[in-house]
Length: 281
Length: 355
Ligand SMILES: Nc1ncnc2c1ncn2[C@@H]1O[C@H](COP(=O)(O)OP(=O)(O)OP(=O)(O)O)[C@@H](O)[C@H]1O
Ligand SMILES: [Mg+2]
Image 1 (spheres, rainbow over the protein chains, first blue to last red):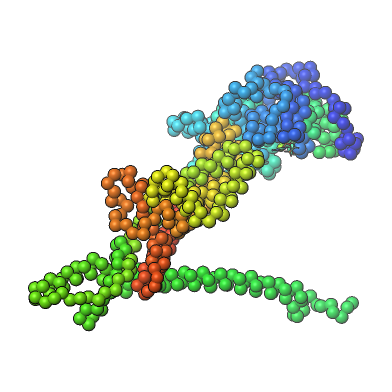
Image 2: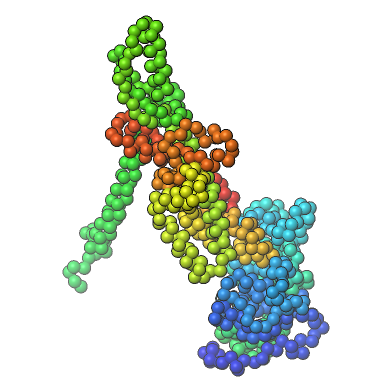
């Protein structure tokens, strides 16, 4: 099937999401942590997400893939309500539950939510402060100021982000003095310093060279034992390498969601197959 | 091949190269005119002013000019010599002569004097007044301006209302300063009943520079990368925590840059303070008040107004010219000192909060 004909497929011909297929009943079933149900999302008058339903399991890596502009970042930013920052953005219908709490209820404390759902951005964005201050930023906000506790968290977070050995002698130098890959790992360290439950990553490796990318991927693998990770990526190999489950989006719709293996080896949707095999997107 | 075709290494300039050359010259001459005009203005003030402020003998600076209040100058001849004396010296001198004459039983000598107001003494109260006006009005302008810039840029929902407010603020920047003077007079001096006072001057001048401060502060806030805000919010910071820790420190150098321009304007404007804060002459210095509260409600002397007062004396004479240029020179010096201090401060902040 050519890319040309794919674009002409109307939304109604999409296969229904297959998130609840019993096929995933393998030995390591994790509980659902994030439950997105029938989500419609608008930027002003433009509908960016159409009826998304998706269950993300705990302590696994879930990858969002799809061509540019299909709404991956939008959905990711719904999970910690970063979209609240955009005046025209709104969730029109549907719910997102994290541990059975609907995070779009008016009485939800967004600050608490964001402490539990950390985020790493596409463009690494360390503050122009020292490495130490970058990591302790979140804790200081919460009023933690005991030096011993901060020191401990800095070491733990940097070790957790596989950065400790590289920076342990220069903790008081600017975070901006690090290389691009180190900066991105610093941002990951900063995120895990506040001990979130979930870490959202929006194309965390898109600005990194292959070696730095490999290190971050390794890190994602290690973090999985403690955190639930949702990662947006344009890199098929990356999704295949480091995720357990993969969701394929197209034009604001969830086309297919399954085990990463299934998505890459025997996708049930023709579009998914075309995309993962690099024939469009 | 046409005969007119030129070799690419031809030495004869082509039409386009001649136009290019002419354009460069037009631009160069325009710059030169500005340079000459600038040099003429500064040269004139520095040349004439330095004759008043500096002197050839120790201590090389005319200390009296910088530390005394303006006085009336008396010029007269006595026993073949010509004298120039400030009013207090002159009175002492005349009393001395009268006593001498009385002791000798002679009639007191009649001195034929010419007096020139403000041409003796110095400009100390004016320096003090200008510094007070600058400090107070910049404090008010920066606190109000930065606060509203933060609100407009970080909190307010961007829409037609905010756009309209921005437009209004921009237009306010084009309002002539005399209009601000009138506004301040009607509002603070008359309606609030503050009379001609430091407080009324502070608010009038602050309102005058507010548009510049707000606009520039907004620019400085916009220049802070979005990533800092998102990074901070994603770590569970409130909006205010984010602004305080991840936005304002990096916007401060930019805000200061604009306020440096504001300082020069506030220090130099005559029209807004003419009806609101400035006294032609006042014997007491600002800190010589009975109650602390009176400090705010006293008028002050100021350098630009002094230049105006002295220069508008007709006929002009060599004595008042000395004061005019001396005052202008001191004024430039003070603005330069304040601006340099702010620039140093800004550069230190900038090197600390660079990204
Ligand atoms: N702030 C915004 N205001 C208006 N529309 C937006 C905004 N951000 C995104 N959109 C639109 O929403 C749609 C989805 O965008 P989104 O950024 O989620 O795509 P994406 O899948 O992350 O793409 P990419 O892979 O290029 O990052 C796009 O059509 C985009 O134009
Ligand atoms: Mg994106």
